[in-house]
Length: 282
Image 1 (cartoon, rainbow, N blue to C red):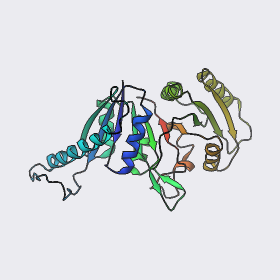
Image 2: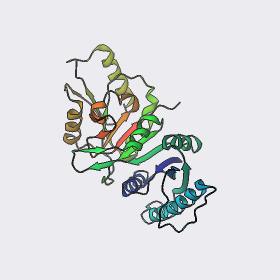
Image 3: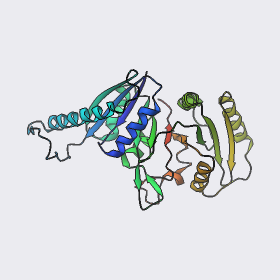
Image 4: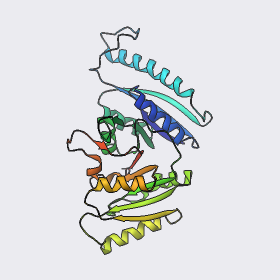
């Protein structure tokens, strides 16, 4: 059974990510952990008819959150297509968001985290949001980031951008292989080289390693010599009708132009396709 963590702030954005996760894992036996992380600095909502405990404010927040989570899970049950294989659990934590996520990932043996991204109406980009960006870069767990208005469609074309410097164990790619096999998808390996026109022998060897690893999968290799990584990725995603982009976390620095806006406090994602980020386990 897969254990899937669904952090929520009760927004429609997080609700959309949860809907996507339910359909994405429709054919798998899953335990879904719906988590809300409270901060003691939060202001208690005026319309919750719950008594504030002045001696134990954390207990008050927990009561409010559990009440909201139960309503949230009830809402989920109305669209759940696989009631026999999916179980839902509610979790509350009080403290720092990333610390809480790491704690739950360890305690519940989480295999996947699914979170939403935020749309930006005045920009041609998707804003990951501080929490989602922090999870992708700071939590060692496979994470699926879902754009705000993305509707689930079975992924048939998956892009795998890589710098070809395989500084990670290839076992980190196992979740990707599972997804490809589950959806009978095709894999498109993409390398963008800004500095050298031709690949050197070391990178050629790594291409062979990847081809061997994906030997039983419908796959192809694509090479771009482009100074702007984000433009090349965007063109590739659109021209190949890509449904899902997958990256290894160690490659995020290589693709920082794709993910990091000129304002370093804002992380942007320039496509409306879901993003799967793979992490090596400790």
